[in-house]
Length: 165
Image (cartoon, rainbow, N blue to C red):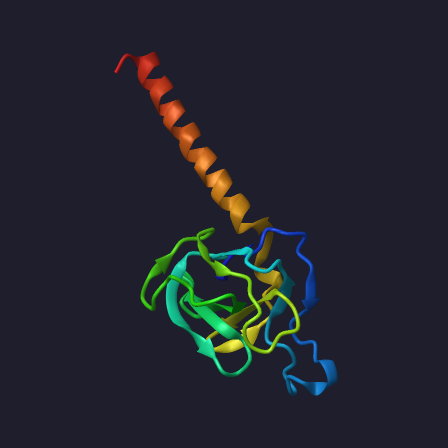
C-alpha cells in the first residue's frame, strides 16, 4: 500500500525542479531528492497526509527550517518540508492531520527564491512523490471534509425529523 498525498501548497503547482534532476551534478548521482514547488513568501504550507512529526529543526545540509512527518498507517513513508520561513509550531511526536497548516514558505537554507522543497522518503530513501499525489490540494481536502461533515449533520437531523425520533 502507498499513501495518497495531497498537494501541500494551493497555487498553480509550478515545479521548478523535479525529483532526480541534477543541475551541474549539484546533488550527486541520485539527483534532486524531491520537488521544489513555487510559493509566495509566507504562504501557508499544509500537511499532505495524516502523520506524526519526527523532526523539526534547522538543517545545515541546505533545506533550512525543516519538518518531517511520518505517515501513520504507511510508517515507512515520511514527507520532508524544507525552506520554511521559520520553525513549525509542531513538535516531535505531535500528530498532524492532512490539510493542517504546518508552516509557511520561506527562504531558509540554500535557496534563490521562495519555494517549498517537498521530499518523500520510503524507509529513509528518497522517492519521487509524483506517483503519490492525487491531484487535489490539501486546502481543498479540508474544505470538502468540512462540507461533508455539515451535510452529514443535516441529513442526520432530517432523518430524525422524518422518523420522529
